[in-house]
Image 1 (cartoon, rainbow, N blue to C red):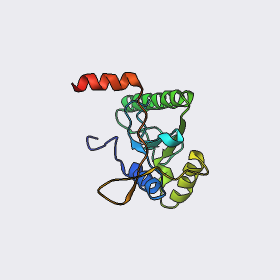
Image 2 (image 1 turned 135 degrees about the horizontal axis):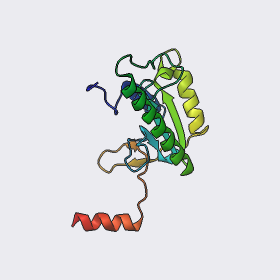
Image 3 (image 1 turned 90 degrees about the horizontal axis):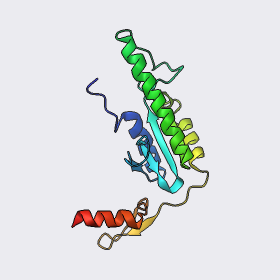
Image 4 (image 1 turned 180 degrees about the vertical axis):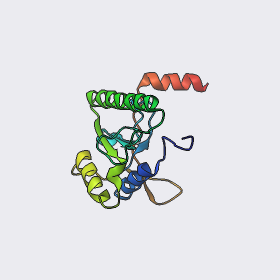
Length: 163
C-alpha cells in the first residue's frame, strides 16, 4: 500500500496524454479547487477526476472487491472516500464547474476511445484553438492555457510577502 500514489497514476497519465495530443491544455492538481481535481481546464470551466475503481468504491465494477481482511477498516475507508467525493463534486457544480469523472475500468484498451469521446462531448463540442504566444528567443509558437487572473488583493498580498 505504501507504493500507491494519488498523483500521476497510469490511468491519469493516459487521459492527460490523450487530451494533450488532441489540443486540450490543462493544469494538474490545482490546490485551491475543492477536491484537488486531477485535471483542471479553466478555459472550459471543467474539472476531470480520474478515479481508481478500488479506492473510490466503483459499484458494480470487477476491479472493486472489498478485501477479506480488516473488513471494518476498508468499509469505513471506502465509504469516507465516496462521501468526500460526492461532497466535492456537489461543491464544484454549485460553483459553476463542469465535473467529469472517469473510472479506471473505462480506460481499458477496448473502450478507451469511446470513453474519451464521451469526455470530449462533456467538455464542449467546439473547443476553441488553444491560446498561442511567441517567445522572443525561440521563434516558434507555444500552446498554453492562459494563467488565471488574480484580483488586486491577492497581488498585493503576494508583493508584500515577496519583499
